[in-house]
Figure (cartoon, rainbow, N blue to C red):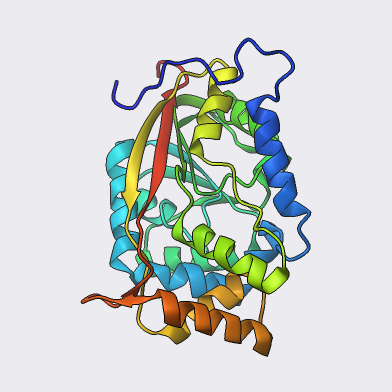
Length: 293
């Protein structure tokens, strides 16, 4: 099968080494304890952040191309029962509901759910079941019958990834599909450049898809991993980039604005499409079959 890794994890046979679940947990905790980083629930409850980063992103060609590629990779049949964990503004849920799928979205952020309701109303897609909780706080009884597809697209904010995955398996009669970063995305690379200038310390990065795959291996799950290239983000102006990273980095003062403006003026380069910061990144589609449906 394309993309399947069969090798043992790097720490196999070494009982004193840290498990991959521990590595994931430690990196997530480092992000949660950094005073300059808003927790995900707070950040995505801010309507300005949702409008600036999600609603605006849907107008970008690269965004729609990424979503189309995800649907092509998952091959979700019409009428399937789908669970979308961290479904946000309905990027996947709305088109799936339009195709007749019975979709349940887990989304704790109020601002995200409000935008999802608007998208549903505009599309005429019909009903989507929304559970306004974090995945970690959901009981199996909240979910009803097992799902044909369980998916999470760049929404793995959970500190205990092992428990989160086990709960996904428990409610799935078909396949699980996780989309996560294989290499640091452009916003993480930019944040790593800017964090020391703004906050005077290193940026606490995310655990990547190699760590996630090793977690699954430790759990006895032999998943397929398929790399996917992500193109550069295109900005129309330097001001647009500055405004986005004021939100992303939670910094709005005049000193910080000057740092951002100088950085993007120096780093962005003009192309026929607009201003880009060079260097593509890769994400990963990690999937496995829970049981024969």
